[in-house]
Amino acid sequence: MAENPKSFLERLREREDEEEAEAQKRAEERELAARRAGSGMTKASATAGILEDARAIQESGSSEKLHELLERVEPLIGQVHQLYNQYFTGVERAPPIERRKQLDQAMQMLNLLPKPTPTLRFKCSTLQTRYMSFVEQWDRRTRVAEAGKRRL
Image (cartoon, rainbow, N blue to C red):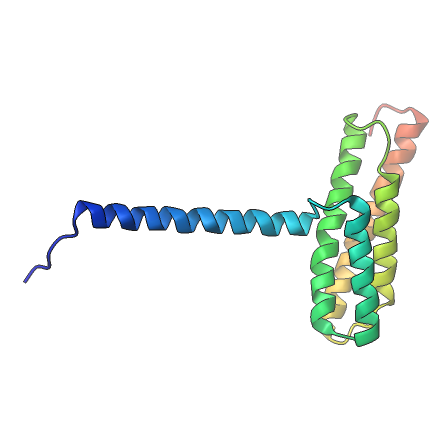
């Protein structure tokens, strides 16, 4: 036999519950993206947190902490790249020198840390390679921009 169809109010409650769950999920995703991007913190404190984590990893040798550190450094590279792009397009008047110094420190610290597993060694080397290619690009384009040539 056929079951009783759901009443209008039951369907409405289910839909509201689904919408509430979706809204909660979107809020959690935004919060996670903000934490990864370091928003809500000053630029110096975001990098200082990374350096403190690196020191803690160096003392403990925890591979989980190293993985978390890699997850935090990767968006930092993206942020600096975005700031350089803003400089090259003329949105910003000066290159992000201070932020780049902080990123340089974080990458140097990352290079000094022990990498206990091949997976972490691979992730570190991949991140370092990506970072170095950006550094070369930023330096080259900055020299061109400072020389007054049109092509950036």
